[in-house]
Image (tube, rainbow, N blue to C red; front, side, top):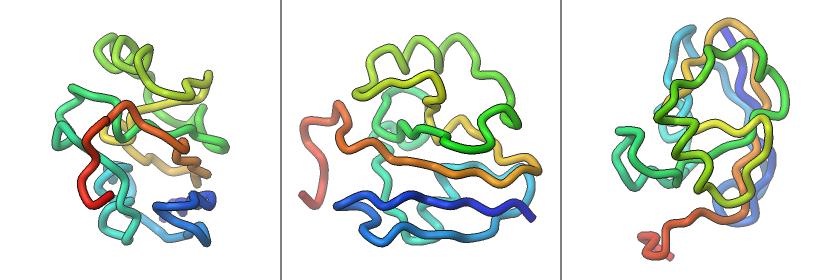
Length: 112
């Protein structure tokens, strides 16, 4: 089973986290299921960028992003070459190391 390592994020995951997921698991759903309260304002429908993550390790193991995701990522805060929308990432067989950017473009975050 692949392992997901989440790097520390001051608000969402101060100590970082590490957990296993089933193959073909959705990254955003896996984060949420393991207590990582990543934003997902569009309810994981690939219509916003609030679930933006940077894949620090394992990026090349992921399926290529489609044009909709690529266009949306252009609006994400802190975009990097290894950025993805976690709602569009299927965890295949390799372990991933994930960094959640400090900010999102969501001006009305709940519970903040």
